[in-house]
Image (cartoon, rainbow, N blue to C red):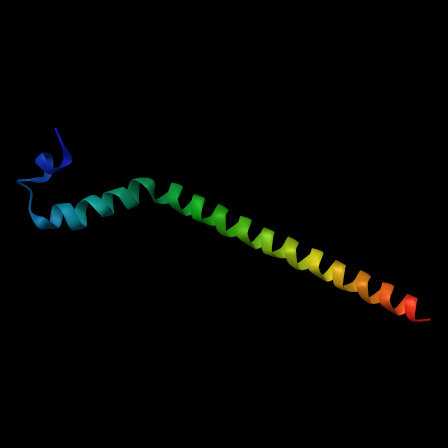
Length: 69
């Protein structure tokens, strides 16, 4: 049976309200944990890039000032 056949005789609110709400209740914790993991990973990557960029900037500043003397 295809999903269309299963939902063919159902009212619109079952397809568009009840099923998504049930999916969120069942998989909500999983979805929240995956989204939280991805946001945390993105933050760590951005923090890493910022720290490495700052390190490169500081090293270049000290190297250019030491050459000028």
